[in-house]
Length: 256
Image (tube, rainbow, N blue to C red; front, side, top):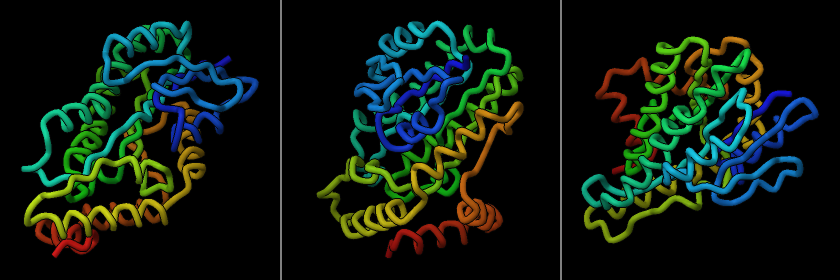
């Protein structure tokens, strides 16, 4: 039986992944602060921002054939106004947590015949999100982390997934700063535009099925982009010179 650990499987895309992967041939363990409500999923309570809790949770799983890191936080704030405590916590959740999970799971992953690690990155890690730059930085880091792990240990099929704008409650859990002086109008415009993109974007079910497909492959690439529209958008973005890239981002997020 394949043993899959999902970190952050209690809601959003992580929950949809658990629903898609659970079968008679798989054992799913969810690690998060709140339990996954899917019947048959084993829950271990841990705060991913707490390294000791996270390592203890991963170590409690006897067998690990696949690790899927879905935990994430987002923060909408002008760079100069963002509190260090908020930025640090987001980095702890989005990228340090992913790194520590891989470190803790590595001994058991290496015992698997075909081990996989999937890190949920974002299209924002390629085309940065204005006023969500710290989030974009963490997601860009996951692409580099996946490539590094694959280079260091080719047996571990580590893949970072460029997740597109997706319809989940994540849109409404984002901390949005206020009272940011001259940035207020553009901050609100960009935040509203991002929420609209997400809530009119792909379904969590669609994204989860693509993540499940990565787990099924014997040798997936280190980077996978979900959604045809998302692929075309990122391809076009990457082809632009930097001046046009920045112009396109300002237009996309209604920044004056």
